[in-house]
Image (cartoon, rainbow, N blue to C red; front, side, top):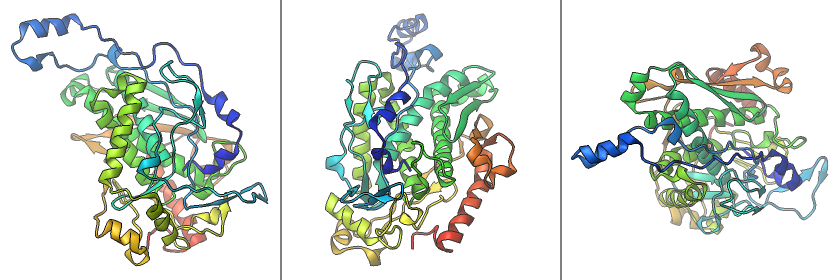
Length: 415
């Protein structure tokens, strides 16, 4: 989770992370190829012009570099700066459909100009926790982060799977150097599955692995802003579900051709994000506050302050290839929350490791070289200098053991 203490860092800290972007990003050629024209004129089938994208027709989306500040779990959270409590400071945290603001690709506390389409200025996103009857608490910053990550990865993977020898996508460091290695691929299999479909599958799956690494790294003490610990928020009850929701939304946004420009992507994301929250039955902000209050002392502890580890006392580590939302237990729900949600059924989200008969790990690997601070800790000290996503299950087992030791045997369960 991207903890709210980032708001306490100077906005200037976010600015050096914004690299200069080359002029060819978010640019897609609209010039038809000779093959397109031939198909249009020669074929009677109107669909004959459809074909796989050429590598040069994939947009060059700029890599994400900024910090999207949000959200410790709970409501009206207090904070400390080092050992000193911050008086009269409260983080309200709960939002609803009417206070989401507008999506901005790679948004931060302050965002710069990425292609001249949107001006420099203060972030227009209004992120926080939305409570939904079918999806539990949704961290809107996490949803936006992983829509953006999956969107960035899809064309990067698409360009490399068209190359029989694969390739490497270098990612910004996060608790160590990160890269995605696309393996040698069979061009015939790519064409059979369809390069666009395959790149979308791989982008979503790789973004999911990146989200697991983020939660894992924060558990072991990594923080995006030096000196600001994010351990309190690692594997928070809403994190993985919010990540999965963002990843699931990306293909729908791309299906509308929204990756062709930044402004179109932002607008289409707003539409789909709102529609998803409506489908999950988002509640008004006051009912959302009641939902947070209902699990105070059960999932989180309002007597604690960020960044105290005991602020969040229950953690969700996933359920294999399905992500289950944590819903407020009926016996804890307020009258308003019970009336709003009734007997709503939880919406499970799939995070499959295979698609179309293909094991996605055969096509791509997430590689990480953990920084020295992590390598000195168990279980990283048992590994070599590089770990991959295949090591995550064993590492998370250790995280779960530590969580049980600190918070109790049921600290990985919602009730």
